[in-house]
Length: 613
Image (cartoon, rainbow, N blue to C red; front, side):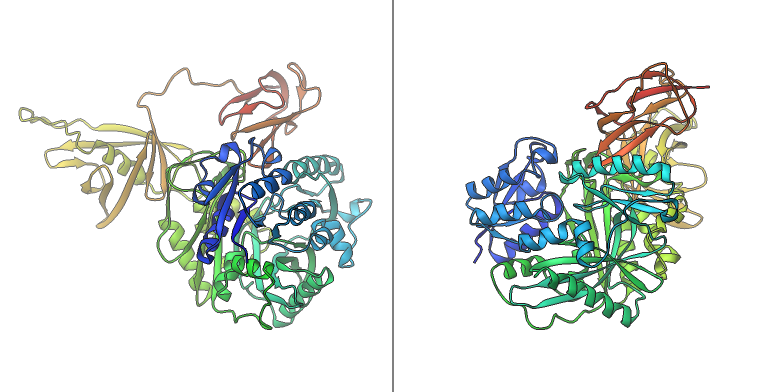
């Protein structure tokens, strides 16, 4: 029996595993980098061990340090979570060689499936060799790891070299393995997967299907179980292929077999030899705790002959600290408040007051709803997200709500190109027009301009806010009866709550302020000075850092005075394990270059200037 378990991971998955361990009476050990010293997963574990450094390469990817940490803390088992070393067979061997229990499949099974190229060969599928125009479009893909990192779509042959180079660099940074391969890219397919659970006694359970088609940058955003609209014949085919893949490598534990479904056919993608981020939707539908099952299987227990019966429908949305309207740019800062209504599941690695940094994935939390039908589950999740308190950096919350309510998704007609088609409309929805006025009235509460001697009409007060990238100016007045504004009736106003009557309907606005940042219900605003700073101007062609991160590369021979073409990549930033290109906005001359490789940058920092012409 396992008594003490170390989780070789961080964030929400570590916290989620610790929760199950607590229910089973198992003591817990966390590992943390220097920047994660006060992270939630390090605080909730019974014991925490420091991994010196900040980057994944120096910390969470150091299997030798993690094994030493497990032994030092008295752990007798290691759970890898997902990402990092979860699909590294050498790490699994190191854990077993140290006399510890490995909560995962045998190293040989990981080795057989960890490389996507070898997995395809095992399933009788060969990757593309020499790519020609006839093969386009193609997908460059990292052989190791997952999560959409190290992936590039190539539609023109001349772009292949740069795609290979970028994918290798990103894969090496995220997984410590720069191997990539090329495969055909299937347009408008659905990403469907089968959860499996296998024991060491020969039983393999196919635990239903999941649809994970809504993706950005090949990373899943919304997942659900079961996958809607599949025929019973196709579902059985998926089960058969998934079980075959598991049995072919004598698999033990939880794993996922992924497919692309197009034209009623299933195309094998890969097998993930670990727990998936989206595992909670399967847990909800089957009434299982997959982490508890992983632990029992690792202890040698046998599964029943048949899996439990699936009931209802479950949907999961991933909350990211990112701005979908700005090319999914990751965001950093203080997460002042994170709370969702009762009735949905929240898996998170953050709590109120935590800092969101640049070193790791920008996912804040997963919100999961379960209901008797798909339509009810979508409505439940959208409503919970809409009412959630999310105070801090910009998130993808509004995008998630609109996605869940989009007719194409609601009807189950989505595919992996959903955001390619609909991102503009999903991010163009106007924010609440009364939010700036509510923020101004809350700020003005208690600041009456009247004394006993004054009976003149109050002059309008003016406040300015930035909301959704645009400036808004609002006017209000102090009167003998309180605050007033044109076009609405102010029913109530204090620092935390404003009630306005608009066209005969009363609306409530809950206010939370953190410095100049103000949250009015689900709308975020920034208070602006009344008079703008006349010196805050930038030269035309200025390139600003869209996010915090590290400069990992500058274009070859890029120096001040050289000519650049419109759209030419100039600077590569790495933030939250993804690489981002900064390109020339127009043809011209590089008149200034302010950064070099290895340099840390903050949002809005001037990187370079391209003089048009």
